[in-house]
Image (cartoon, rainbow over all chains, first blue to last red; front, side, top):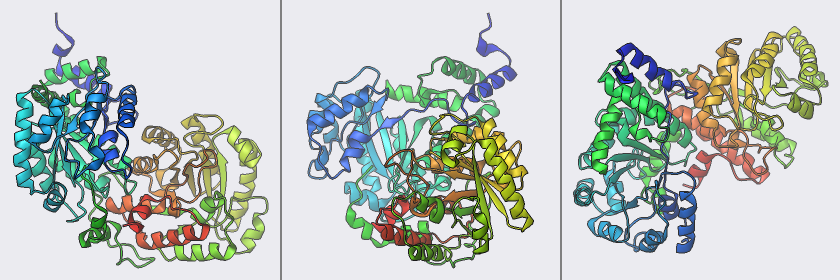
Length: 303
Length: 308
């Protein structure tokens, strides 16, 4: 018996587009995965050092909201980031709810091992698209940082621990000013190539606008499938939601284009069909061949 | 993301970055900014007219009553920024004739897409208000005075909740039909999002050409710029805003109201869209009025820049 995804191509295309129309704004994904970074990126940048028990309570409350990814802490030296000095206690103290992932930042092997010992099952590394920022922030050049991250990510993959990569200064640097999309692409590609399942592109100082977001994403998406990308927008100049909306539209436009040129329609159909049924599937696993194949690639990194 | 030490905010490059992004320095008031590369996001207008409502809608909703000389100075400063429309008067009442005698050359009328809001706000039903506006607009047209129409509660009402796009269209069509040259669609309580903005505009644009429409978005739920971007993508090229985000929300205590002109210009500049407005001069005018009324600016661009 012929299954839904074995019907002729025109039906596939119709169903794919029809499915997409459910969103009130066309050209948007039907599901968006939110990565909550408040407990780490947020608290790290607050002046007040929050007591450990408050952090644990905070994260436990967030775990009950439906969020599927909550970044817990950072395994860095307390000399550099005193706000995260209690990383081990927090990691051990939180209740890890089923269905929720709790990544932690690990800038080097030492941090990685401490994180694993404390119960971490997902890690993050962060590079920068700016040499100056890299040197000022993590005390080494981009190239040197890639070397360190390579060690960390390899070790993580060896232990079946997924690794997420961040690229700071994706839309501007406080030291260098403008950053070219090509530089962002180069650094992102390095992180993706070493095994990070997802690259979060960060507008670290919030200077980006929809135009610069689009240009940067178009450059990065020539090398990395949209399903392996995330955006991390700061609202310093009030632009964050507009930038995020643009990113969602850009991600989806490329997906639609891929459907239009008919790459591997049967896989497209199965992805559309399955995501229509399973509403909780994250964007990174939704529909469209490029995303599906990158998701499979990602899954191989996750498993 | 990494920490940005406070010392870096005094770094030369950071100032340079601000200059690149804030376009400080070169623009002359009244002259168009040099044409940037064609809009970086396709499907956007080349020019966006900003209607500055700070002196009217903004100050009207501030608790402090601003002295007249301060208001005049404020408006005079805004006049030197390149803004082509600055709303200075309140909505039209039956006593509009003295205002015209005082030199007003443009008037506004505002209806609402919600019966409850109309009754609570201007003490009459939508139908009754249309009757009054018809008289006013006809007289204005007779004297060659342009009339602008507002439609409040275009994306939601504090009393009735959801408002249908059809109702917004109906009221807008009445105002346009009676002779208003432009209809400003207001998200009065800021509850709209890009989806509801799109649905509402699609409905209204079946009856009124986009060139005769404007959006007036409140930022009460932080959605204003995303909603404005959506409107621009649909062909709207007139946006209302208030310098410093003046005027809180009378329906949500402590919440913000109007979208800040500075934040809007920042986005439009970044998109390569012409506005003719000098952002830095607007920021200075905003700084002036905030100090005068003793309040903190609601503009994130101003907060980030003046604290840099």
